[in-house]
Length: 149
Image 1: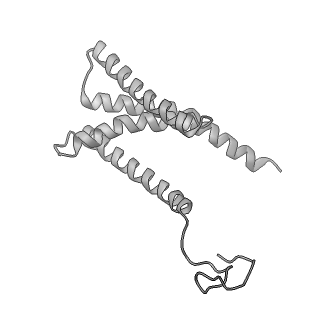
Image 2 (image 1 turned 90 degrees about the vertical axis):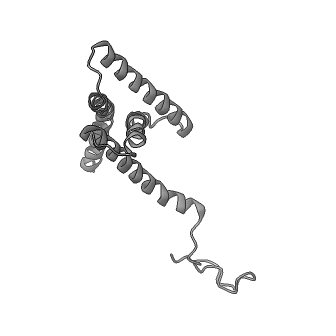
Image 3 (image 1 turned 180 degrees about the horizontal axis):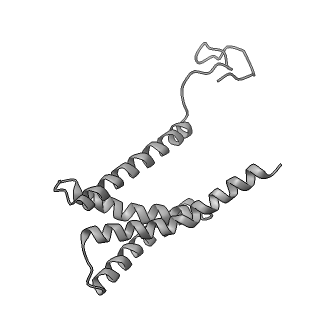
């Protein structure tokens, strides 16, 4: 990155004041780390859902499936509530995630249809239904922005 500015030598480093030292600030590192963590979360959730749906015996099945069951509705609700502050969105997404899981479990138990595969599938379907209007709204905005001169 090249900056235009004072070219006097800095007393601390012996370098020109306008030179880029190659160091990254903490804010840049956080911006780069967030997509990496999101990708890792999606991968862990997908593996958990697959392990539960395939009914594969693995020591990672329970924690990964639990992560999927909590993260999928939470991410969908968090994406739908973009207008809230980050703290408010986090609290609403976490409580909404628990509510979705409890409602799915209650409905399946009331209908005598409880199974692990069915529960994971139902939570995935409810999460997709929550995320669908948000995705459609974003696509409409993107399309409207392209067509506006």
